[in-house]
Image (tube, rainbow, N blue to C red; front, top):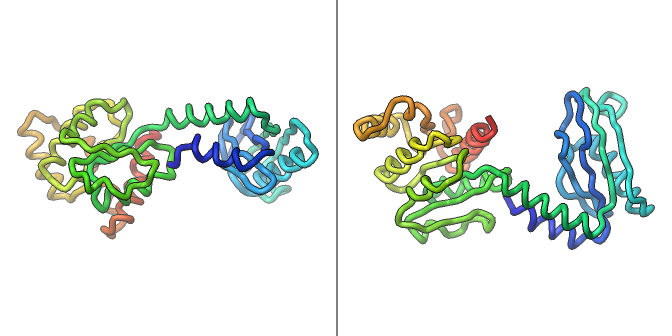
Length: 267
């Protein structure tokens, strides 16, 4: 996703007056969890606490604080028919105007939160690699694309990290625990090498390979002959994105795979 500190700093730079709205307490069924936050200026908002009437009320209260130059405010809202929401829970919000110290602290907080995002490493910058990187960009993950071909690393979003290397398997070995590995290179032999390396990482959150039933069977035969075992092989997801949707356009594969990867990262 766009680096949170960059987009946050842009918002704050354009908003001399802004209020922070933060979920202090969330009971029962609520749109967002405790700690979720958003910013409100007289003209714009940054982030969300879940939308609907809850958010409209929070925005109105925040703009009231800004207009009247009141330092703090709060709301305690039952999410029932009286406000046109049927979640059934209750949300307590803290709202306060941001001074310069709080602005700096918020940028630091956003950076720390982004630094804790799980990593997704895409091996291959072809059509599906580009589509998948684009699909993952808005999500709370850090995306790295690894390639052996320089030209394949062109035209990725600026917030996607790219790495050109003759030894892509090193990216598997040096990745942090709970990384998602997605293998979709231009070379089946390289795919097999990278998947074998990824399956050796018992701490991987996800190991996926673009392909078909035939490619899966071929890899399995090769993998077992070269020291792999059935238990580790069973963790391989291929084809990525499943087969519920029979549309092989890159954007469709990417949408299905992004959901699959995000599910695996949040188990």
